[in-house]
Image (cartoon, rainbow, N blue to C red; front, top):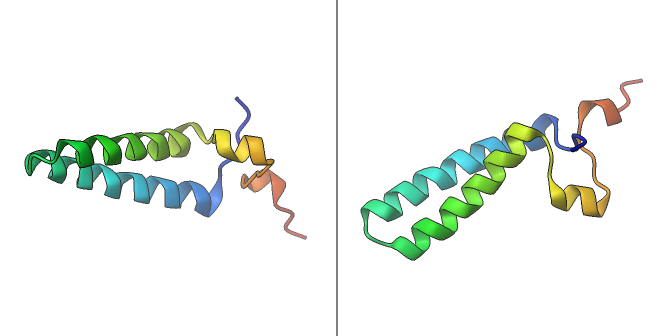
Amino acid sequence: MERNVGGLDRLARGIVGLGLLAVAVAALVADRRGTAVATGIAAAGLLFNATTRFCGGNYVLGIDTTEASCSRE
């Protein structure tokens, strides 16, 4: 898998992923299993993207937010 997630995009995915994970845990404690499952899956996806620096959606759309693709001239 070629990296296509970087910079602020990666940071935002990590922060939102952790926030969704907290919501999933709170929903599980409140016995709202459907909400817990849905937010848990979303959190897992975003945290996977932030960790591996690869996003299938970005790949399909041809988006690359890694630092290597940004010119700093």
